[in-house]
Amino acid sequence: MHRNTLKLTLADEAKALVVLAFRNGPIENVHAGRRCPTCDGQAGISRITDAEMKAIMKNAVDRVYELLCLREENPKEYDYRIMRGSLYAASWDEPEEFPRTSFGYMLEGETRRKGNSI
Image (cartoon, rainbow, N blue to C red; front, side, top):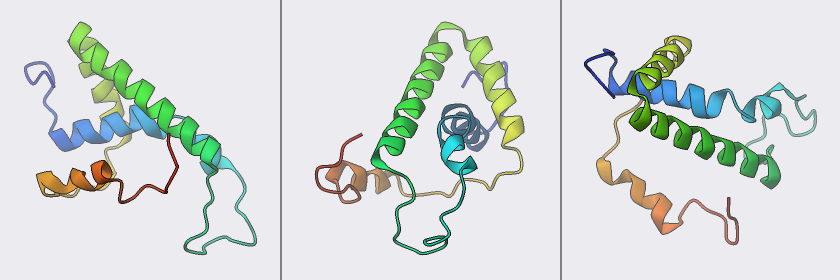
């Protein structure tokens, strides 16, 4: 982030990126839907279809890409959008600290179902 024009922490920036790239996307359609009366609250029951998950993740990637391009091409506009997103997320919990090696699980495929792709 361009700290000379915007004084936010990395946690603020992370939450703003989630607002801009994820929260205000297709996940809202899933979230706004009716709850399943049969499976509501049951652990282990999938409530998001593969097609919905693909749309959610595709949108998030597209928005993050857009924001990263904006950061390079128009830093002031990027800072403005991050500032606006951080206002929306101001009451959210702070991110937890994880060891920098914690991303390895995604690369090793431990959390992915066999044959599933985004």
